[in-house]
Image (cartoon, rainbow, N blue to C red; front, side, top):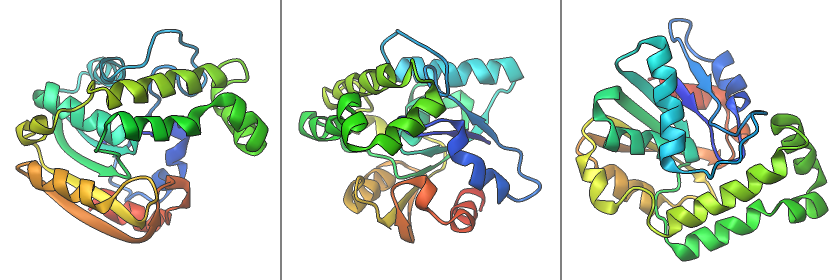
Length: 221
C-alpha cells in the first residue's frame, strides 16, 4: 500500500500510522512533487501529482497498488482510479475534500498565504520550513493555493467521474472534521459503484490529531 499525504504535507505525516500498522502490511509513504524538500517551479496539477505516483509504480515494476490517501492525497488517489483504473486495486481515503467550486477554493486559499502564516502562525511557518526547506515552503504555499483555485474552477474530478471508478473505495470522515462535510463524503461514497462511507468518531481533520490506533484499524482492515 502506498500512502499519499495532504496539502502542505509530506510522507512524514504517516510516521505514527506506519508505527502502528500490522506487521504483515508493507507501506510506502510518498512525497508529491515539490513536497518534502524537493524544489519545484512547475505549477501543481492533478496530472503532476498522478504522474509522481505512476513513476513510483513503474520504478517498482508494480502493475497495481492499494492506496491510502489523506486529504489531498485521497483526491489524487480517486483521480488515478478514474484516469488509470488498471493501476489502482483499492482506495481508502480520510479527510478528503470532494466538493469543489470557486467559493470553496477561495475560502481554502486564505489558509495558504505564506505571509499570513509567517505573521500569525510562526510555529507553523517553522514547521513548514523544516519539512520543505526554508527556501521552498513559501513557494509551495503559493503553488498549492493556485492548485486549489484550479480545482474550484473545474480542473479536478467531475461529479460524473465518480460513477466510473470501479475499484473498491472506502471514504473515511471524522465527526470532528471542520474542513470536510459528512454530506459530501457520503454522496461520493454512494456515487462510486463499490464505494462505502465510514465515520471515525472523535476524529479531527488533521491526521496528526487522529488517534493512530484508530486510524490504523480503519486503513488496514
